[in-house]
Image (cartoon, rainbow, N blue to C red):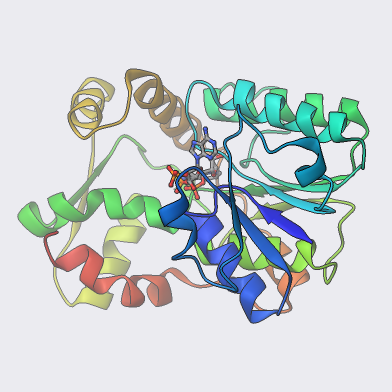
Length: 287
Ligand SMILES: NC(=O)c1ccc[n+]([C@@H]2O[C@H](COP(=O)([O-])OP(=O)(O)OC[C@H]3O[C@@H](n4cnc5c(N)ncnc54)[C@H](OP(=O)(O)O)[C@@H]3O)[C@@H](O)[C@H]2O)c1
């Protein structure tokens, strides 16, 4: 049996979908019961959180765990508490953990990757069998540019000329489902990218073609990017993390392109045009 954490989020929801398609026996871990009932699959869920994990006898029901938590300041602390609960339950489940491209590189000083590195070091030390999924930036992050795209026909980002191997969250989920069901190699790290590395100017060009509307890219200085991001909701810790990430992208360190999606799923990673086409209404209609 498979336990899916983060099941209501961008990747986790799609993991539930992919596991339902594969007829796998999946249970979601949710914080609020009402959210569990709406998830894809057979409607199995338990209510718990990372810091208030399920009881050992409940954890022992699951031999595979999909581990995903949000990129927040407490991320390492939360996942480590949860991993320790798995160890204490004593049944050695296989953990499929979502990390991020760069987490395994000691010189990557982006705080999100540092948190994942800290968790991975802890997880490895427990001896639990683990598979790491290290995605590049999700295509879904581009939805943050939807408002400026609608209002000004511009994507703002402090990315310079840096390129990113954007991956669709759905592809990350499909890989996770294959690993969780034992249909893909479990004894490795997957660096998950889309089919090509794109600069933000390339992204603007692709959007122009798919939406048949002229879209530009404006490279923002760090101060203005900080102001814009702080005004849009993330915590100051997350904003500084995004700026570190964009620095890393600008330095040309995030342009990895791999065939790992294909290796795990048998299908090529989704091209950005395809994802944009599907996401058209999210980009073009105000909420
Ligand atoms: N964004 C990117 O481009 C990118 C790239 C590479 C890697 N990543 C990694 O991907 C992960 C984020 O994935 P995502 O975008 O799918 O996340 P997301 O949409 O923010 O979803 C987070 C999930 O975690 C749950 N959650 C939050 N706090 C919790 C707690 N204390 N206990 C239990 N569950 C909790 C949320 O439940 P509720 O619905 O109850 O809030 C939700 O299901 C991060 O680890 C990030 O580093 C992101």
